[in-house]
Amino acid sequence: MEPSRGIGTFVVWDYVVFAGMLLISAAIGIYYAFAGDKQQTSKDFLMGGRRMSAVPVALSLTASFMSAVTVLGTPTEVYRFGAIFSLFAITYLLVVVISAEVFLPVFYKLGITSTYEYLELRFNKYVRLCGTIVYIIQTVLYTGIVIYAPALALNQVTGFDLWGAVVATGVVCTFYCTLGGLKAVVWTDVFQVGIMLAGFVSVIIQASVVQGGIGNIINDARNGGRLNFWNFNPNPLQRHTFWTIILGGTFTWTSLYGVNQSQVQRYISCKSRFQAKLSLYINLVGLWVILVCAVLCGLALYSRYQDCDPWTNNQVSAPDQLMPYLVLDILQDYPGLPGLFVACAYSGTLSTVSSSINALAAVTVEDLVKPNFSSLSERSLSWISQGMSVLFGALCIGMAALASLMGALLQAALSIIGMIGGPLLGLFSLGILVPFANSIGALVGLLAGFAASFWVGIGAQLYPPLPERTMPLSLETYGCNNTYNGSNWMTTTAMPFSTSAFQAPNVERTPLMDNWYSLSYLYFSTLGTLVTLFVGILVSLPTGGRKQNLDRKFLLTKEDMLFNFDNFKKKEQVLSYKSHPVEEGGTDNPAFNHIEMNFTDPGSRTSGTHL
Image (tube, rainbow, N blue to C red; front, side, top):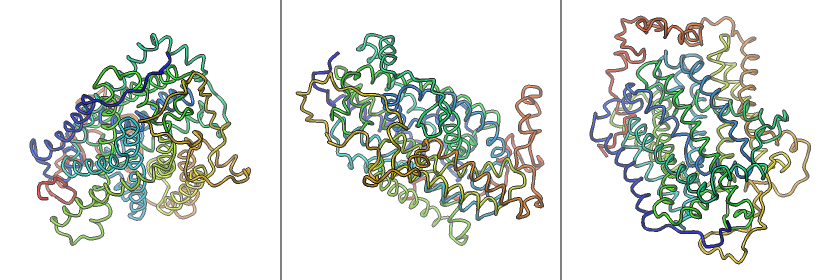
């Protein structure tokens, strides 16, 4: 199995497939902007008019997490650190249950557009402001990584200019955000999950043909020590063990699924509460399928390159380029399939970025501009929100430049989500689960949580943990045919194991670095959440938290927990869980009453018809 003949390159058909994918995505956006029901209100634009059903929403939730980071990052992760990553299957189960049973009921019965409205209702407007700003920072950082990832792969595979690709992605997304609205985002996502699965499946099938069956791939992985599922070492400094993935991973992902605006916005857009929960549970199946595909791709990578690692051999310049390398290696006789794979990585990015930019513009206009400049006319608000889309598009491109310095993509993305999402998750948990928490406790807790998680997170970027903490498995190059001249592969001479460009020069390792900064990156969010909760509780008690009189509907109550069982006993009394009287013109959905319905507001209606 010596991959001695050259690696393939892109041919005409690959470009055709790739361009086709971009055109279809853009067409969906344009269709929802001009045809169909026009997006009359900001409600329509941001929430699909709250009439979505479970399946498309579930696929859409799945798609946003299958950004290019998943497509390129997870197989590499498995290749380098082993299949222990597949324990995330258990994490996803826990995350979905927590989101559906703790956070969803409260947000759904309040019927809010922005999750940060909840913070104002439960605490006060300063807490809401903090939450909003934090969200904007997190999303811009994350989106930068997501734009940079496929550009890197494309540059590697096709010799596309790297920054040309980054800027093009940003511009395309910004254009298509100012058109579509939530419906367009959801349906492009559905289309795209199809493409991503096709990309993964074609790689897995062809790899098992080349390597002589799935059984061979699994055997190679076993012999190479890649099937390391049972690592029960409780040490929180080890990068991936059973405990870091189950505990740390659950906190990290709950901060994305339970309280992140771009996720909550989608499942709240379902017709009824039952459909909303259903969409989360269907999405769980999607997550599992994708995880299995990605892990199999990682094992196939190892099986193919077990005696000649292209990365230490300088045939690729970054570990995240291993997947595209494999694709060109094994699929070069099938014109069009490498194009499908790149389209798969790219479409992930397009949807994630477009929904991020959409959510960012909406949150900025609703939470920052409107409350402070109430005199603005609708016309100027609509101009502002289009300006916002463009501004955030540009910001995200700038962040992509920073991402190019951050090292391994998957870890960078999860670290950012952890550092920022952790304290936010703590803030929402304080509101929903702790009846006596007050706004002073919430603010102090949030700041303390940030201080803790940023201290560790930035420390870990500056002084990366030692290899015995991260435990990369061995990669061999003895089988390489070194006469190879890397003409179309940009080679670098960097040592493969440097993970970050911000590293301090060689300093003495202090105990602080070896212990505190070596904390597994999955625990960043656990740390942030727990610090926020504890400090919030400790500060709320002496500052009069027991005395405030709170409306029960802001908390998670027994009725919310029992709702599932009622659902089967008495189907006809679906309205019994409503927290306010039915005379408000309520349909089946408490958020959809006439007060919100009638006001049209082009402020965040970024349908670009009046450019």
